[in-house]
Image (cartoon, helix red, strand yellow):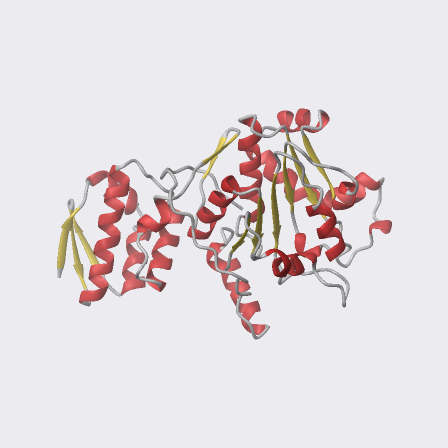
Amino acid sequence: MVQLVLDPKSLEFLFDKQKESLKLLESLFNVDIYVRGHQLQLEGAADDTAVVRGILEDFARLYADGVVPDRDMVRRAFREIAENTALSLNDFFQSSRVIQAGHRKICPKSRNQSAYVEEIFRQDLVFAIGPAGTGKTFLAVAAAVNLLLDKRVARIILTRPAVEAGEKLGFLPGDMQEKVNPYLRPLYDALYHMLDYERVQKLLEREVIEIAPLAFMRGRTLSDSFIILDEAQNTTPEQMKMFLTRIGINSKVVVTGDITQVDLPNGKISGLIQAREILRDIEGIRFCYFDERDVVRHSLVQLIISAYARYGGQAAPPPARREEPPGDAAGAAGDGTPR
């Protein structure tokens, strides 16, 4: 049996009315936790109670230092520590950078997301590879809005390949812009989450923010810009090379994609998969990887991704080179919800 005393405010945050965090700790580590006032009593195997005690003490210290993460992130941290007890809460929260994006504060919700955000601010070219719902695009847009409003870039350029995934563009109603808008809708959605509708429209009208199909990038030089290529698994090698060679002075580029969901015709190589092999050893380029544990949509999405991976006879694709999470970043917290 282990006993410890925690600050009442951290206890109140950690153990909400439904005691969901408490119940999760008990189920993950096979430990019984009894709360009597400010005192906690842990009962279970010595190794398990030691890990849970460390989690609770780390949380109390972080809370006392002003780090107040949201409950979803706390529970994600519990699950990852249960899989790897060498981790601690400090690995999740002390390096979490909060992004002020317009009227929203966006906080990474996993270690991989935190590492990804740090690399975006640190490097000029970052590739983000992983399944849907892991915050790849949303966090990149948040960083772009942050740098634009801080006047560190002059414009934001958001682009996607308009791949005919089962539907023919020619048969869709409207002019070319109306035909490709459905492909670009997720980028608009991310912007509207951070900036009000009128402000987004003004920035679009002034071309401070540009949202366009990848084909529109050909022949341009993109300087003083934050450029995001989304759904990059659907680029051809030629398109990827064309896009990457558009990068101009004082520009920052993020390329996102899910290499398990390539919509190119059979026999076509994905430009993202090829770029991973060609560029992985170049200094100044970073590859960040996500898996089902980083999914911040409905909890069923994690299970669906895992089930499809098992059905296909393979786990989530391993990184070509394992990137270490960045070390020094200010610990903070926010209320945003990466998607």
